[in-house]
Figure (cartoon, rainbow, N blue to C red):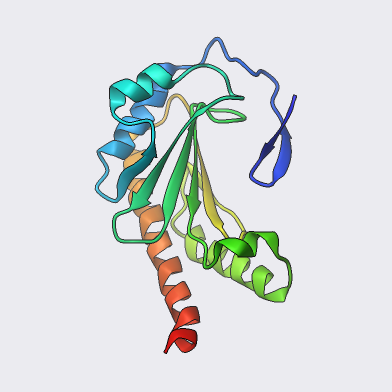
Length: 176
């Protein structure tokens, strides 16, 4: 089955995964809830509600959002991940939400600038994306290391702050 995901069609082999590890998925959300850099601001509330909502259907994941503590970046979390793993995280921090619908040299240059600012902060779980709105995608496996995940959450938070600085420099001449 094909599903629309991050602006492209992807094939999902198994819509339900009988081997999906709900406890690992809940541990990903618990790690995020305990992280000082990311604050839950949407979707399922509370660990009990999240665990109750998590199922094994990749076509109907539980989604929740986390705002950066001191960045305009947000994390959108899908559990289970649409394609593989227990969770997928998208780091978003657009200069302007409408740019995703546009093309041209400015949008391309901005997308590459986003990727360069986030690339050095990505590790084993996150990969940079060259996009005007989505900076990185994290794919979290069932056997993830909580310590490494926590460290990478801090790192991508720092990457999002670097994108904030870029956006501030771009907006500065326009609003002064």
